[in-house]
Image 1 (cartoon, rainbow, N blue to C red):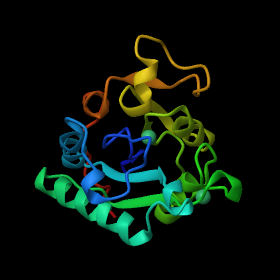
Image 2: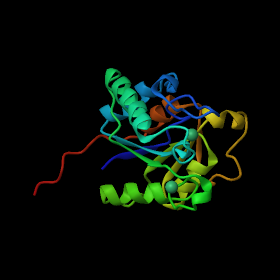
Image 3: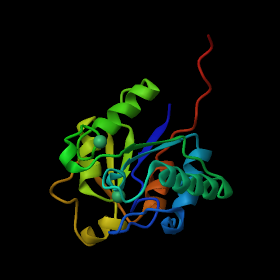
Image 4: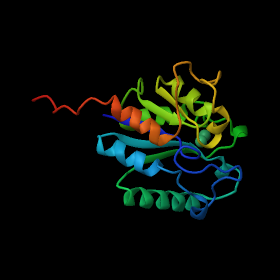
Length: 191
Ligand SMILES: [Mg+2]
Ligand SMILES: [Zn+2]
């Protein structure tokens, strides 16, 4: 299965230091929804792995998070794209959970859900902690220079990223790169 794992805030939609707490505060980044649609059309399944400590902090509730994702799914559908699932960590750092990035728990959940080894699966994020989590399970790591990634513009790979991390201007540039190296989808082997 062709699977891509994306961070949400700062990667697909505008990041906010005040947290994205409502559908009104969720704004897609330029080209991001189209990038997901292009991946889908080439046979890639897309899932999200997102820290949402605003839940644990009491800044918004699960109903609000669901409403934000309903807006995202609707906007994606209008762009011809689709995200299969959103995996999120609701905890605050003090909870000591395993799913808050940079720990790899969300990625492990994804691997279990799909029954696949995540080695080599492309993972994209705008924070080094996204890529530390992804790298811990063997993902192919990609940093985008949007959201928190803006601070890394004009540099190489930040030192606290896995060393093999690729750097892209934004999600659109990542998608173009992935599609350019894509091999045509082969027919399944005869039974
Ligand atoms: Mg982010
Ligand atoms: Zn967690």
